[in-house]
Length: 475
Figure 1 (tube, rainbow, N blue to C red):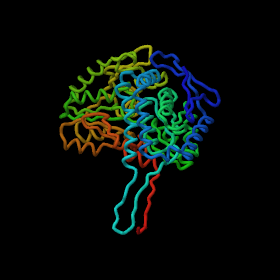
Figure 2 (cartoon, rainbow, N blue to C red):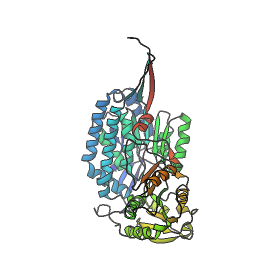
Figure 3 (cartoon, helix red, strand yellow):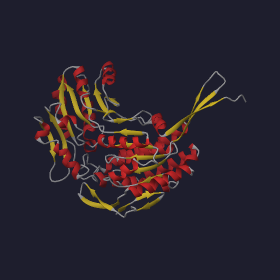
Figure 4 (cartoon, helix red, strand yellow):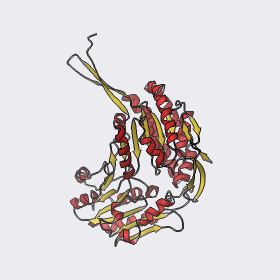
């Protein structure tokens, strides 16, 4: 099987004819040969995107016509659901049933939502009693560099390209090297949907291709999801060209469980937050803080639920936890379970599952706040559970890392819920739930978790150039 770039509407190998093998993390064998892009491929893709933007017709189309093509694109994503499920499973070990139930519907919804949002929010008219008439146009920004991570390749690629395309931009999409298949399929389906050549280009490859893209002077916007370290490098590259960036970076999510919480509900959502996608989620609730009055009861229920999760073949509909995405990532995650990393903590359950890339849902207790597993983004099915006494202590513990992407809190007290949500240093707070998304709302983080927000009007402002027009015409 070959996975190719899509540049200027055509599937193509790399300009330098370089390829690499892509590894299925369940079988741990190569299942595809992938075109490895470099600077020459980035040059070709950016040039194609620039022609498509400058010469049209994409940015000149009416919003309704663009929306019609994007809805057709979303239809094709749904029609190819099984191919996307196979791609995500073979690329990063995600259970196919999860892709079919969550990732594909959300990808199609991303496209449809932003197609309609752009059509319904194209201009602002500002009332005036001075005789002048002022309005704001939201004009396409230009060429967008979209760099997607390996943990949700389809969902997060569409999260980036949907608003960019809806607002008339052209795109060069660079997926992570480990997960190229769904991005390449998106590129092919965009052409099939009737989106003009050069509007959506896909370049596969490693970090050198991403670096060439982010420093390219022909790029007008950069949207990136990934590690904080890479985000800093992208910011530095973008600064040379004063290119606006939107960075959704790492996380070390917390959950604060008060002793008045519905514990069954808290356990259910905390299991999802900690162990979905084998913990390979930037929003993962990997630090649980439980008020002492509920601590023992919560830990017992939480442990039982974690031990009941089924590991196995991603193609098995009953599988809940697949392998980690790569050997390098497996070694990173298991390194955090070494005695020197846990520093005196206790492994309640979990750990490596054998001679493979599986890690069982792992629960640690008694881990000091300064331990690496408490402070670093492990990005695996590993969670620490720590007791606290007062509301202030729970908030302080939740805020004790440089990350600020996600937080949860569980309480039946409405006043406490509002009060605590306001004090948590996080771009997203879920009360008695996890990862409920309204695409109209802003999404992003603070501190080491990123810069900027996307979603709804926040995406509109990032992917457009607002232009104020003031008219002084009497008739």
